[in-house]
Length: 317
Image (cartoon, rainbow, N blue to C red):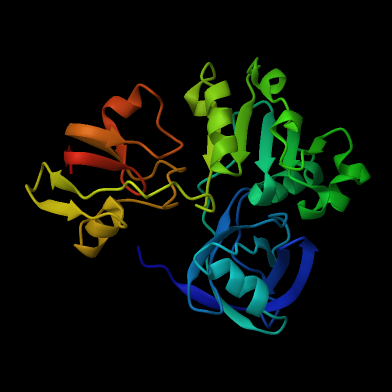
């Protein structure tokens, strides 16, 4: 999936919490940037050459700049370390046009946002937009380990967000974790959006089994990695063409198909948007690692960008 990148100037770079650096990008001529909708993300080429996705945190009505916040992941692939350590005011960085795999549902009467740690980022553009535009009601639950690591805390404490935001830190103590069940017990027609560590998202998934699947949305940029220690090679066969591929440990089915020139729609590459869902013709055993399939769909659907199989998998491709 080729994308056009444009050089934008870093006009602001500021630490806004422990290990989290905020960046703003703008054109040198201050012309308006391509529009985006709440929940959208940017692809950015980091100073060390890697391409990473970051949620836009600015209000979509602010068209003269893009704002993101990046958490330095010491054990990550190096993109976030490069951004936090090396990107400076005045630098030119390559940025792709915004995309949105986490858009607000227009037909929702209200919204519930659940953010864990750096998962707060997509909700900033949503919350700012809803407040500034006088939009539909929402409630944001912002959960973290400690207050010093929670970005935008000062803004959330201001009058614009009074009564709309619950901030909770637990110092990593499970006994002090925020109880979300009273929030999720009764759907009441709201649409739920969750972004954060995979453990939090799985817990929310479990607690919303009685919700309509169309009203529950997850965003995951892969910052919380699924264990790959037990991964094994498996064979993927495309039913329509008869082509077969070995999917080795350490590579996803999407990686292999893309390298082979097979046309597969995809976007998030983290199992949270559902763009690359394929129908299963046959399978020995499936290892679902996504956040989008319902229990019923797991019997005959497969998310190509993140999930795995054992033995042979045949997809309707």
